[in-house]
Length: 255
Image (tube, rainbow, N blue to C red; front, side, top):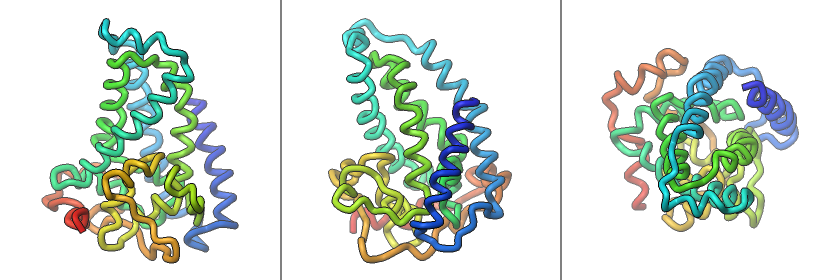
C-alpha cells in the first residue's frame, strides 16, 4: 500500500507537471472539485483489491498440466502476462460497454475533466472482474505471482499516463502503445468514439478488431457520461438505480 501511494504521488507530480507544458485541455486545474471522489476510489481499490489480489496469488492453485509454464524464466512469464492480460482486459472493457454492464462502467466515464486520477474512478463491481478474471486465468495457467509483481509498477504508471491531461499521440508509435490522446478519444463525447480504443496498453487489439480511432488533426471538446451522477456516493448507487440501456455509442461499432 505504501508503495502504491508513493507511485501515485510520483505520477501526480510528474504527469501533472508535464500537463502545464503539453496539456490537451489547457487551463484544466490539477486540484479540480471532484478530485476527492477519485481519491476515494483510489483508497477503495487499495483496501479492497490489494488484499484480494494478494489472496489470489497465494491460494489459486496451478493445475499439473500448467506447471511447465511455472518453470519458464521470470522475464518470459512477465512478457506473456503483459500481453495476455492486455488482451483479456480489452475484451472485458468492450463487454462493459454493452447494454447490461454499461451502468457500472459509466462511473468511469462520468469524469468531465480527465487526468491521472480518473484512472482510479471505477465502480468496485466494474473493477472486480476487470482485475480478478485475467489474474485468475493466468495464475491457473501456471504463471508465477512474481510475474504480476514485476509488472505492477508499469501497469500502474501506464494507467496514469493514458489518463493524463497530455496531448501526446506518439506519432508513428501510436499503433504500438496507448498514448494519452488515444485514450482521451475513448472518453470523449463524440459519436462513436466511446466505443473505440478499449486496449489498456497495446492498440493492436483495437486494430485487429476494428475499434481503433484517433484522428490526428482534431481534439476532443468534451468528456463525460451524462447519465451518471457526479459524486462518489451517487456513483456507487448508480448501477442499481439506472434503467439506461448501454453506452450511447454502442451501435456505432458497426459503423
